[in-house]
Length: 304
Image 1 (cartoon, rainbow, N blue to C red):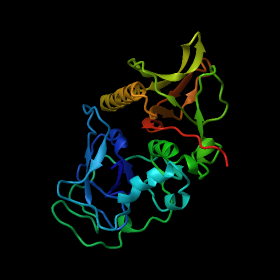
Image 2 (image 1 turned 180 degrees about the vertical axis):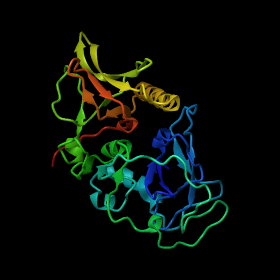
Image 3 (image 1 turned 30 degrees about the vertical axis):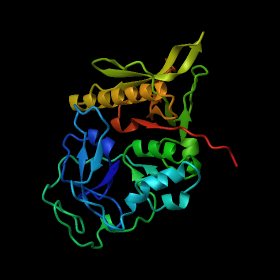
Image 4 (image 1 turned 60 degrees about the vertical axis):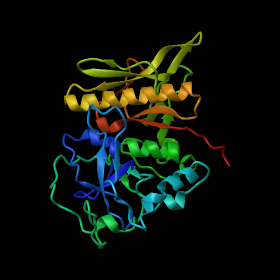
């Protein structure tokens, strides 16, 4: 599972965003599916793990019979072929409606168990807690990661509204801006900028990390001036730095393997950053929640 429900805050948490936490409560998450609430455990979230984080069920445990999370893979497959806007309105884990940057919790009560949640090795009957209510609409995301994943996964539903502070446009189609290989441009308005991740590794410095992208200015079939993301991490903890570096290395290896295999999927880096007026090839970001990588097939459906 790519996301789960925080038992204390009752918010959906992306597994990849566990890297933002100084402390991860391994007993603090349950399935966010309607009438389910089975306990799930975060995996591969530690700095030394070189695979993407995820949530998994304990051995021998299963989702509730009516859990709608089990159908999310089917929705993703259908979303690649046509609009599923109606279903996305009641599937809060798939297509966020806005970005809301809030402080993530650090430590939770490891004893607390929400009403209706399955404990490890047993279960409790469902009640009318927030975790079990049928979702009334699309949720707010706490980082850009689930928004970027939805952009790639549901190309026929980019007409859906998306609200992000500081971004004037208001749909998935218009909020995202691809950085192209036709020369370096100036972008007067803020967007979620994205491009394929370059094969070249990021350059590490004490106060910043410079991440090259596979887009920018080409000359004689060579990328001579690539767009770069400059991560200002002087105030970051060593744990936060390590987790970002590991994510980038995983993403870089994914991208190289996909290209060598001639697969349709590629790894893209997404960022909400400020374009450097003195060097337009650079986008500067300091907030961990405003940068991520996603590996998927980028599709632009023909206009009807």
